[in-house]
Length: 252
Image (cartoon, rainbow, N blue to C red; front, side, top):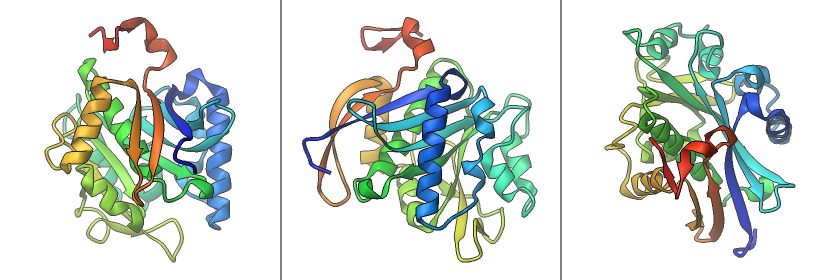
């Protein structure tokens, strides 16, 4: 990708945008097929009907191309989190963890993260995770309770989520790891609990997330892992939130 090309990162509420759901699912399926991975729970389309799912989409500036995406799921009584579906039969303790010990406990999950092969190496995964965590902190600022965010990670994403403040849940599986989604692959369960403070995150990630929380609509030059620069147009304001967002600030 050329350095002067601009990408957009937007968030959609799944039940408010069927077109975004379909585009996301098609792109995710195509990427999984390209790596010969035929089935993971996060690629299911049941989430299209879940009112507590938010799609993070990386698009071209014109919006006619999609380069990648991720999803943020909030747990509710009617839908299992993808991580519960993925490892629930292997270790039922996951249900106790996501449910919590009191009625007010609220958990979520970052999942379904992907980007096209042509965009690999541009650092899009960390941008997606930053946006998901930033939106979670915005939800908290709006008085929505979120106590923890889970992620089921492939080995090559572990360092990334650790930099963002996630820690491995060693009480599950084999010290937090599972053979998933195929016999040749290992996945590990990680959890972020200090969502508002991000005390365990490295400084550059903490600052990036706090900046997105403070300025959810902005244009910014981001550095990729290989030293390249990407122009990113962030818009973390969903259509139903526009009325309570004014002068670059949320009306809390």
